[in-house]
Image 1 (cartoon, rainbow, N blue to C red):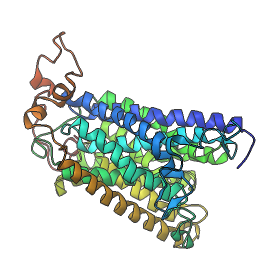
Image 2 (image 1 turned 180 degrees about the horizontal axis):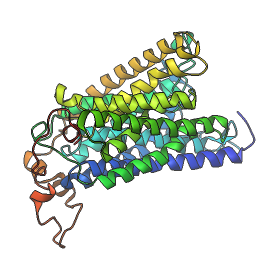
Image 3 (image 1 turned 90 degrees about the vertical axis):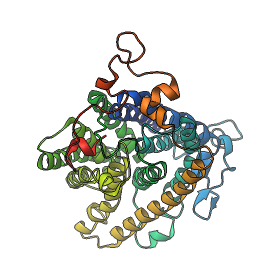
Amino acid sequence: METTLDTGLTAWMLVSASLVLLMTPGLALFYGGMVRTKSVLNMMMMSYGAMAVVGVVYVLWGWSMSYASDSVGGIVGNPLTHFGLADSITDASGEFVLDGGLPVIVDVGFQVTFAIITVALISGAIADRVRFGTWLVFAGLWSTLAYFPMAHMVWGGGLLSADGPFAGIAEPIDFAGGTVVHINAGVAALVLAVVVGRRAGFGSVVLRPHNLPLVMLGAALLWFGWFGFNAGSAYGANGVAGLAWVNTTTATCAAILGWLLVEKIRDGHATSLGAASGIVAGLVAVTPAAGSVSPVGSLALGAVAGALSALAVGLKFRLGYDDSLDVVGVHLVAGLWGTVAIGFLATETGLLYGGGVAQLVVQVIIALVAVIISALVTIVIALVLKHTMGWRISEDDESSGIDASTHAESGYDFGGLGAPRSTAFLGASGPVPTPVAAAGTTSEVRS
């Protein structure tokens, strides 16, 4: 504990926190453009709703569950220790509580943005068809029972941290959230997609994005905000932050190329949706590795992530689950790859750098533990909500559009009528009348 305020570090972390917070509105644009006209507002509201709920519960008990020193079995911090941020703002003398020269309250601000974006990511798997109220309750329960414990286990000195039992093999590495954020959210998305069920028309009609420029804008904001996510996780304006910044850029650029190459070979076209999705795949993959790989290693990391995710988004048609906006194909697949790839590419302990297999083994272990914990917790929450509040809106409301039925609004007002004049053309009462593409093509696998 340092008793002198480090103003440079404080400024850096405040800027980083602001960048990460921007990612959730960016995600709202990214997801909003990928759904149909009749669902855009609801899709964006799911991100803003997650922001509202998690921002409240984090202050009350989320910070304490994530970072309280009195751990419950190495799984979660005591929610009462810092309930309502007790003893986290000022001390008995009225001075700000500092940790390493950083006011703890600034760290609270930084960490809450991670919790918010993680919950918001899940919403893309259940687009078009769930009750908004049920989603808000899920956001509070899942952040409490899945995200906060995972954050404690990885970053708060718990089971998956450098102080945990697996550190005897090698120190687990998750620089900015491969397990806590992306594997956690990706597994939850898969579970919800299965529990909630498919959209009407899934697999039989093309459910196309309605606004690709919106998707591209959202991807740009995500990329911009991600520098706070990764470089900010260095907790200093220093060389590690610079390395994370460069790795974040190079991995993402390589992932775009990897995704587009797969599209070109498989479908004959390199698409804007593919480029935007490649951005996210690269960002996801480099998140856990940003401080431990070289820029050259990040190129390999990103290229593989882009290619793997481009191939993975088609699995939902083969396996029959409706992951509407490919949260599983991008966040789970790229998150798993980025976490495990550290075992190969970490410059100090990776297998390809002469470090042996220990790092690889521990990275596989922490990835599997994250998958299991997230799956079990999400299954319980999802089933309880299914049999109490219910997940699905009615078939009529889904057909007419969730924006109108849930929010009494429409995303676009053509002709001043409050709704599009030609619902068939805009897809407001169903998909654009386009023939179903052959299995595995871009237009089929992206919805």
